[in-house]
Amino acid sequence: MLRLILTAVLIILAILLFSLVIRRMMGVRQRKWFSDDYINERHRKLEWRVRMGFVVILILDAVILFATGAVEDPPWYLEIWWLVFVSVAVFDLLRAYMEYRFVDDRKAMTATLLETIFDVVLLIGAITTGFYGSI
Image (cartoon, rainbow, N blue to C red; front, side, top):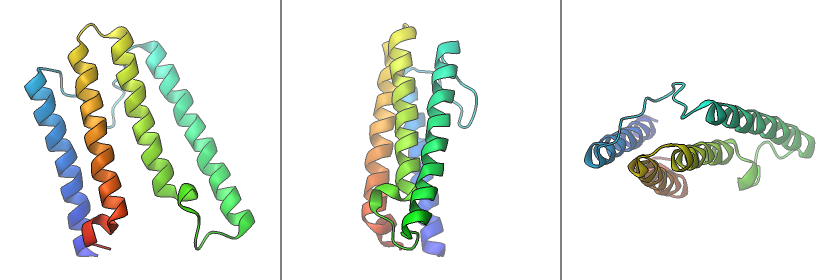
């Protein structure tokens, strides 16, 4: 259990460090984690719609799992970690699109896309290897 927690902390630190380094190298403003950091009002509205859509998907997922009795061994596409992972990737891609459309500095979009690719590769690696052998 301690090894799993340490691995999760190292993954989070790697994501934060990559973000810090790539944004500093590109001269782009550092984003805040877990804040209302929207490009504009349209971005805020779209992100909230996507967020509510994922809440509905999570509720439907729970209903399907309980209705089919697959709670103990659900298919991979109905597992919570997969749905959360997809939602995070969708939020980052939405942000990159909004930066492409409404921000003059293309470096912001490039930094967001690089962060998203790094995060996806790191997390897919963690999930497929059992958090790098911790599980």
